[in-house]
Length: 68
Image 1 (cartoon, rainbow, N blue to C red):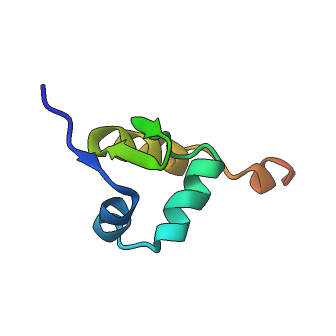
Image 2: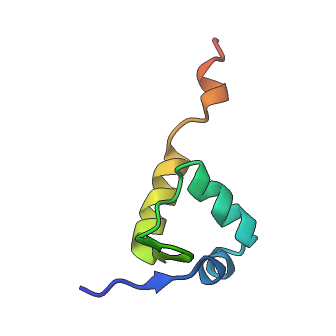
């Protein structure tokens, strides 16, 4: 099984978001780099898809406070 590792710039281009968005998602824990050594960061494409799917399916914390 091969893993497609992407730089933050490559990942941002593939997801059509700004590179800062990748950084923000990483700092928020929505994305976890497969490799991070010094200034080298790589993301596993398959894992990114799983992470984003999981983040999209979990309710936003603000909505948990809303009572019917």
